[in-house]
Image (tube, rainbow, N blue to C red):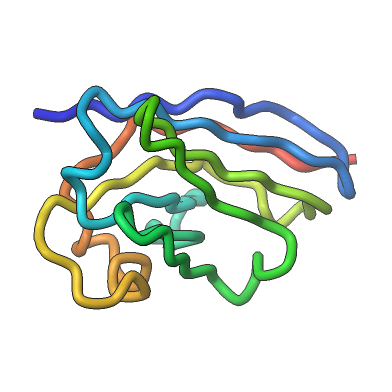
Length: 129
């Protein structure tokens, strides 16, 4: 079972930035896609950003477009989520996610948590003044 370990969560004020990191225990090029989901109490996990492992093509939720950037470091099996201009409604637990099954379009992975095969343990991000 591949492992995904997130780091970099924390508490910030609105307008500040934060970067989440995800370290995969295996070569991320073995995944069709890798990305980030967010969950708040009482709601389902929401796809925030996904990236196709080989090409680097990305998908973002409308709520984070222009503020969040996902990138990958294939040499070190790392995936990052750079979050700028954070807002209170960005608060939640952020999960690193990976898909082992074939993926036709990267948007499909972020559209539904059922499209994900592997999950990290989650990292809390709190945005509050």
